[in-house]
Image (cartoon, rainbow, N blue to C red):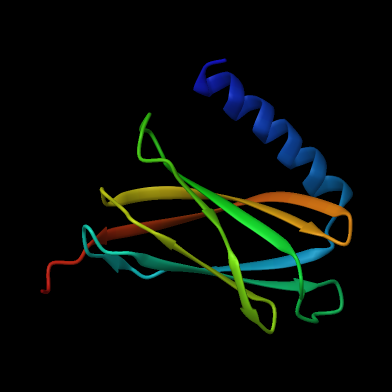
Length: 124
């Protein structure tokens, strides 16, 4: 299956999931810049419908550089408390990325996407 087909199927699934379930509020926090060959923290805060932190979820994130056929980064996020989940990414290129977020919480599965940009850190 080529990337375009996978993307289209993924978008259909995301849109179906997004329409049927708004049980989570997702906030993605990324630094504005990265240093090559060093891990860059990616943080997600997950809240439920009432605005309470989601604790005990299984969370994974796939980062994809937009317009490129490489530079995909997959992370299993570690819970740090209070609905916050953290992963480490090693970026190779600056640019625009999409974060495909998957949450499995109490048998409920959710998939969504957030976008961000990151640049090379020139200060060393």
